[in-house]
Image (cartoon, rainbow, N blue to C red; front, side, top):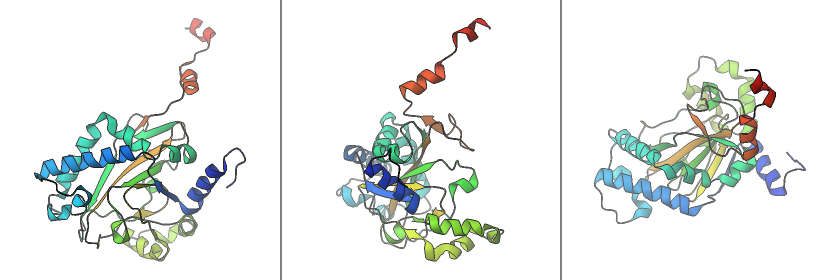
Length: 269
């Protein structure tokens, strides 16, 4: 994809998104990343009654402090507290603001709450079977900003089916009727990309592509966050504006247009 109205960098990023289905880059605001991670560590350590010695490895080793039976209680505790803070979603947006501007647009709607995933080693209770969000009622105009809070690699990360392979899957999708998500995973397993993302980077990916995770067989816990963004004026599906999404970057001209009424229309009331 080459557009003469785009800069060379904008053309490169859009082409990468269309070809690969995702873009991994360094976070754009390191202060925001530190604030988010520090807050999550603070909530977690307070909940568990821990005195932290080494912040850099605390989240990686949380499986030594919590079991799969009470993992969801911890996750919900962190999820609710972090989403209650006024600064949090703004900080999350700042991690990939420029990337979102280029790929999605500069008038955005953002998910009202940012999701949190915690996956302990060898735990099958936090699996996300292969799926594409658009299959279950999400707008195809949405993208996901995925943030690792620890280094994510091997089975400790997520997988994605590239656009070229997804086309083939869709063309033969009728053959998958009645099959389980595990059957579909086995069908596409050889074509999947396991995306390595160290802490300090962020990923924007096409949620219309099949993706998910598997049992984490590494000896560290995975912590990641994800949030949907879309162009404010693009079509919505099951997740509506005001219910699931909120406008965050409405520009002046759009605000004027939304509020404008022709003067003679007022006299006809």
